[in-house]
Length: 315
Image (cartoon, rainbow, N blue to C red; front, side, top):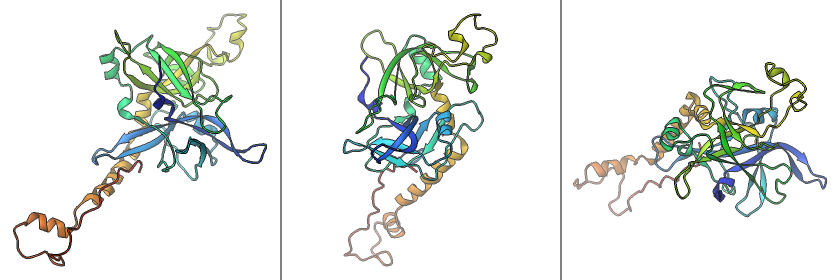
């Protein structure tokens, strides 16, 4: 299955500041992040951009100033320092391994984003028949070859192995998740996972299944005696070739929590005010046949035009 190039362009790398042997700025990688867009509810052509990753990756940054390694429009990678930022987590579900960050991307950053319209929902699952066996692809950081001049995201393939109707045990406790037949490796935590629908002929559409939590990795003491005696692999943490994916619906619940919705609405109101006609123009529009000019308006002066609203990529 050919994976669209745009998929790899929606990710960036997260890490802590470091110094290379030659003294240059470097990054100690902690995981992958990807960009998500939420359209404005009331202002045309405006969307709000968020950086999305796993909550355990955000916590691994230890509340320090961190780096986001992104590709430039000139073909090289650069670091964007975090400054004083706030991560947003699920408002009610502590086990949801999701963290989002409001972000206004600089003009020099080359990136794609995943619209919330691409998120897999229960309705899409029913209508498209998404289920076990459908192809899944994951893109993100490969720590052994991250790319020296620019980010080089790796793509890993798999299939949906199980769509549990009950919480899945993980090192973070019981979480809502999908299980996929694919090995998760260090650096892929926080990566987007996409699923492609199966169609009789041709290539079906794809949707954001969710984000990578990690591989099936449970310590022996959490397995309730289900480990066979003498099983050497089961005596420690073992990558079983089954990866855990946090559903896209959990990301959407974080993005749509009341505080973030209110921030977007406030920004929408600010943008709408920028589009409102000035008083003189409004008076002229309402009374086009009046011969008397509006106060302060010259008949010979060019019409005043409100500057067009430039789509704002972020709040």
